[in-house]
Length: 318
Image (cartoon, rainbow, N blue to C red; front, side):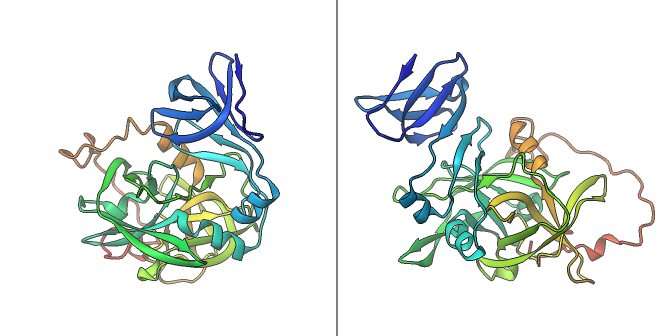
């Protein structure tokens, strides 16, 4: 079955049974997608959707959004991908600034980024560790300037302490045209690639820093990280590391205090696995460890002592 809306450019909702619905997506929730097909609105369960393909934007839309997005794909796992074109850093800063948030707790602050229209945010676990009173500052762009707005009711959806990731959710204001960032799911990462970060180091909101990928797979404590010269400081934790296309290829989470240009980000593949298995990492308010607690194995002496990593959870700023 093929349903075509009266609009000239439509979203293409492809179902698991092989059917397609073309129309304008007017609302999305975690369980349902609402599609305006011209004479009616269809509500389609996400379980029945294989993928959603967005149309390429018109020249006017591309100029306004700066995304030049093609083949936008919304997944069942709360994230989206797209074929984005490389763009100047100043264009990315204007377009993506509203998609990065400041995460604040009584113990400190960090960063995060919006991955879904329903207010889902990725951040670091250590930003919200042992905390339940969480607020988020979003940034609205009005007449070319950003205005800060505080969101009080922020929920912890899932946590994985071992990869240092947290999934949060807030209720977007009704009048907010929310900015969602895209993940670089299948984009290769190479040494020498230009990258940039947007975050809130030491509370300095929406700070942008630029660098390169120094090492795409630096091993540290059983995981691999993206090593970058991009300046990452306390308060950047949980923020996005973007490629030249404006896609998130990592989550900034630590750096060496005793040296410059030695900073690290969690590769996006860990984030995608976390989202795909978020039910396994679901947060339990009665048990902050979500039912699991592992004893640490004895550690060998390491010249790169942990106290040099500012992501260690003793610090106030995250």
